Length: 495
Ligand SMILES: O=C(O)CCC(=O)C(=O)O
Ligand SMILES: [Fe+2]
Picture 1: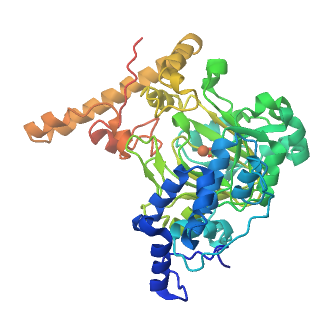
Picture 2: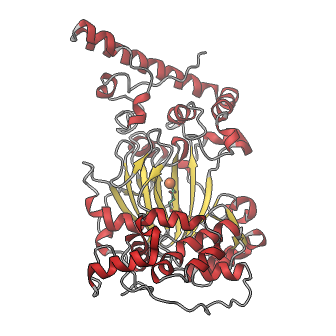
Picture 3: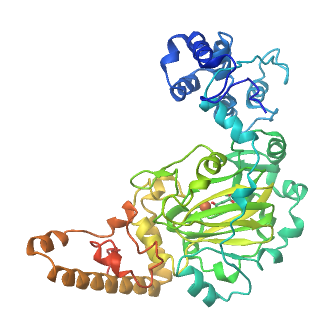
């Protein structure tokens, strides 16, 4: 198969040879030819769409860059505010949405830029058109369980902070029988759903889902569905094992917590950790989802979180990650958890685990994030940063105050939990101090003195701290505590 504009990868075998390819670029881009493709696309993104269309007529190389559909997707999402009717590609969608005079969809003449070499233009097309490799789907190493009691779940999965799939939960949901496209459309108020936080008609999304050729298709991820379609909330039942949900104490002021998720083949979620150190569940009503998960202290290959963990840099699409990194998935010294989550199954996503999801079919799922008694110390620790960059799920202005609001709600409604957390914390600190003292006895005096300067819990930020990684919430690993205070964190409250 060939790129529709004839673009080739950088190391392509253009029949004209490498010199001809380079000449085409130099002649076609003029003074811009010295720029790397990424910089060039960034500049083009700043142009007004009408200017971009004009620029496209200058040369074959500029034609290829200016027609890069991702640019036009950006214009549609930035300018059309959800009022777009997908036309098979984003440029036509934009021109129609803007009611450009004389334009009819499908009427644009496509020219070719055969032999232009650009990975940046070629890779998205390759990722969008290539099939999912069956080799990516072979590993199934996540436990599948049914009939788990609350206590079994807690002891075997929640406290050790390990993923598990429950096979006997979603099968009982009315949603399994009811959630056809027709039913969903009728359920949403005015037929609108949130896609990338923009309300668009559910019908428009379905048309897009059926016809797009995007590298990473837009995802329906609607946090308002229980308000806009209240009957959908009655079509699924939260199982007892996940029903302990302390953010509920905040009432309507709780951070975003439940979503309906729908998307076509190859849509999905890129690498991330869930917000605020909460755990989650994800129940699949239809379709199959490929999951890969790494524990908190193992950063997946190809993923570069910022130092404070607030931002994640990874290849643009999930497909590109699979194509470039799947075979190196163990290069980080860890075998990730992997599975295909099938229709009728629900996944427990442990707090702070990295995960990414690639939909193997058109999928509909529901996900909820929750704070259980087991997770509470970790969520409090996370919120206590009071950093608007790290706290999420509520308006920016409300983020730094979330810790205090949550703390107040707990103090008023579940004071015994705060007392327990404080007692556990104090015991942990004491253990850590004792270990420090003990370690100090075996060190040179000067060294022992410096060591005591290590403060609370900063170890979590550099990914080296172990208490979360090994699920040591009940019993911190001695190695972590001995590692310079990384094992303990302080909530700074007293009773
Ligand atoms: O279904 C998906 O795309 C995954 C959503 C997700 O990241 C989650 O449920 O935590
Ligand atoms: Fe997630």
